[in-house]
Amino acid sequence: METKYTTIFSSELKCIVSEEKDLHLSLASLDSLRAFLPNIDTDKNIDLLPISTNAFVAGRVNRNGDVIDNKTAVEIAKHFINKPINLEHNRTQVIGCILNYGFNAFGTEETMTEEQALESKDPFNVTLGGVVWKVVNKDIANLIEESNDPSSPNYMSVSSSWELGFNDYNLVLLDNEQKNIMDGTIIEDAEQIDKLKSKLRSLGGSGRMSDKQKIYRLVVGNIIPLGIGLTGTPAADVVGVAVEDKEKDLSSVMATEPTETNISQNEVLNVNLVRKNNNIMKITKIEDITAESLKEIQASQVAEFISEEIKKASEAFDLERKEKEELLKATNEKYEAVTKDYSSMKEELEKVKSSLATMEEEKAAKIREELFNVRMASFDESYDLSDEDRQVLASDIKDLNDETFAAYKNKMAVLMKEKNKAAKKAKMAKEVKAEATIIASSATEVKASELEAKEVVNEALDNGIKHVTDVPATATANEPSLYERYKKAFSIEGFNVS
Image (tube, rainbow, N blue to C red):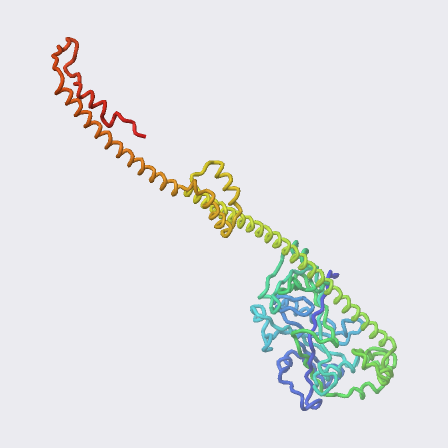
């Protein structure tokens, strides 16, 4: 079956060796893995190296940016049986076979049943057991054992990785510090997946949604386990390979010429041919190429190593370039967003400044107007002003500050003293008082003249001849007497005093 995608999940390898191999090696942390070793009689099958390893963690993302959920892990685990164990996922260099599987708790490595794994909400390890064929590559078998020996230069130099084939996937979004998918957000919508998939590390992206959030690929659907590979590149959250090695020496078997009863080939092989044709020692670092190793490895292996190193360097460079391009793109987007926000904020600030300036100007204008009105009112209150006066004063005082207005007001007090209401009122009061004095004096004189006239009239009446005059029939009884007519003629009301 062809699949659209394949992915590799890596993990560090450790091994369990016999006490004869290294009496000082602590094996306690890997005891739980022994339960998954294939039941092989290594006394009779000295060409087999049983191994078991925590191959991957279900429900927890790995460094490649991929993950499978707990249910899927349980479903596919059984399908690893009979799949190959190879070197560096090179399917032409198969060195063993997977024979069983199991589950244990992540962190504690306590053995779990399949039912417990299905019910678990927490991540757990999927453990695979199998054999490495020593007769194919004894060197890699020795290297697996030595990789757990702290005193060996090959300590922790071997890791395992498993490979899947699949067609479909969902997405998982997790905060930077989170790795368990149960703490994340799962995206299943095909349109949204298509929109975001370019950010996946496995597709050349940065593996990030933002500075605080990462994006991972959740493998789903019809999944095919393709086996596991042994590599020199340590990786993820799964560690440990358990081996049982009684240090049987294969030289006694391999040194004899094989027959048709102990080998399926008819041609005669000796130990040198076996080593020459089957030695697929993997060069994992440049230091492996020595004068001694060149005696046993082929030139093609050196070329393959160099080619793989160039490929790794190229892939690393390409990945770094893409990450930098993605980072540059993200930086540019942030810069553009910040620039846009800055421009928007600047525009808003200018509007606020303009509005504030308008308000300040309006406030200042209102203050000036109120001050002008107060000043004009003070002039109106102090002086009798004509419209022409007001027009001149308004023109003069509109732009004066307090100091210059005080000086101007003092000057106007001198120039406009004739129009000063208080002064005019005092003058008018003085004039009224003087006029009242004159009127009083005139009234006195009139009264004296009236008395004098009365005396003259009385004297004339006394000295004159009395005539009796008949009152005409037309005369009224109320016609005033001569006295009254004189009195009225000479009374104070008859005089117009000015």
